[in-house]
Image (tube, rainbow, N blue to C red; front, side):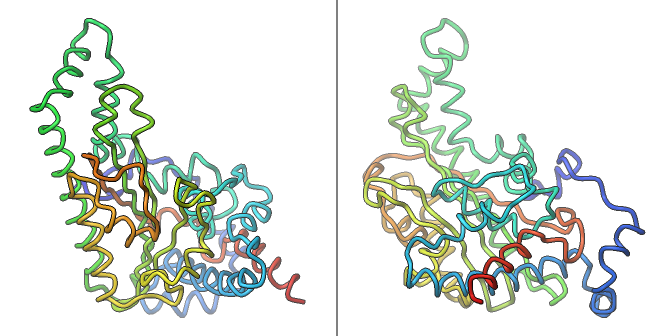
Length: 345
């Protein structure tokens, strides 16, 4: 199965695991609690994800109340100022920045680097190339334009009617396969000790206008964090970059306060999640930019792509046990909680 990180785990860079003695020293205060959960089949890493998610929800709940009084309050800004000691600095408003900030809340301090975040979120380079043909194929073909080479001739073919039709077909099949794999994981009946699961979704689309040259101007992506908290409880976390109709974009708190039916920070039901996934599938499998589906997914419209033929890709990865160094090693969440308590007091 090539539909997730498990198949390329051997190519993924990981941090050195701590020794047993180091784990005992750092986890001593939580030993009784951790061992109790372990007896129920819950791994230390999965307990870490569960605890981190609960802390994350508590922190963002308080931040939303502040945001209602002061629109300048930002989850991403607070993460950036609290990530002391990490090599990553989270600046700007974008889906990628929001995802980096959310994912960092589940990681140990040594893991909060852009290199590691790219690995956790994007998987291996081979995975990214394989599942984003709407970017890799046009970029490769256009890069050779103007030269008498096989790539140049391939670019001419790609611009032809048959070439565009073939590339659309490749992109559509890739997106359909990944959507099928994602839904399989999403609706899988799992025991409580396997939850929550944090799935990281990536949408990418390329307008066929990109074949006219300047392909970078016609490529865009979007990243979404999808949490499977229970059999009937899901959460969606995202931000969005500034664009024509939304000059300031939005961050996590704006999304959670937007009133979008899928943005409820308390979670959405399985039927609601099924609706959201249907919009996802319509968007990634449509050959013409689907503004309604995009608006439902992202709570914003992008006029730049209206009525254009597009090649879309979809892929997903997951924060797995192997990505977690151990229970309660989330200093960023600790710092966020401390900042919240300091301001509250």
